Amino acid sequence: MEAIATKPITKRPAKTLPEELVYETIAGRVFYRKGYREVLNKTKTIEEIMGSSGLQSIMVSYLMKTLFKLDNEKYWILSNEIGLHIDHRNNPVSDIGIFDVNVLTPDLVDIHYVSVPAKVFIEVDIRANVDDIGETGYINLKTQALFSFGAEKVIWILSNIQKVIVAEKGEPTWPWSDWNEDIEVLDGIAFNVGQYLTKKGINPVK
Image 1 (cartoon, rainbow, N blue to C red):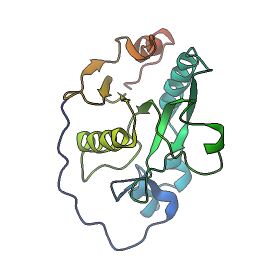
Image 2 (cartoon, rainbow, N blue to C red):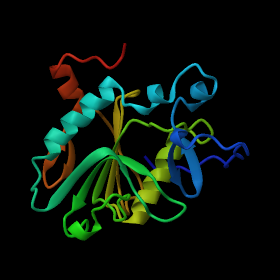
Image 3 (cartoon, rainbow, N blue to C red):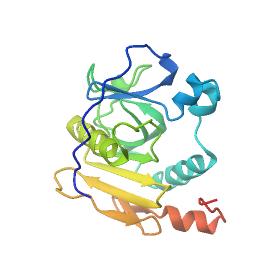
């Protein structure tokens, strides 16, 4: 996949929406949680759109179990919508981050968002409303922001098309792989989401 130019940014309504509906901020633009319009229309509650789906939770659980094979003396493996603070215009979140322990040092761990980059970020599906920018535009925008922050690799797992995108800093194209292929994350540790789900009898397309 090549870095894709985003669509022109459309103006946001002047009306201020509840803070709970904000998913993240990237390059100064606010992304609301997927389903926020249903909350505003009162067809869903905020609680209904904030949680992960069963499929997303199973995938994250599998990935974490796999990543814990990495050397825990070298890396922190963090998850649970990690809040990241790059600057006042950039506060993205990430599903999983693999942090070098020499970068995320104990003195930087507190009640605030993480202010240093992970070596590798993994995103499981798109949790933000991206109607005005499109999925590829959003993936490009967020990936480039994480690279500028200092990440070396960003991996996207997209269950709706059963694909995995592996973006590496400095590479002009980002390969798309079928999610039934082995995907190396770091230090020889790889995952295979499609194979795992099949083994467990889970069919994501229903």
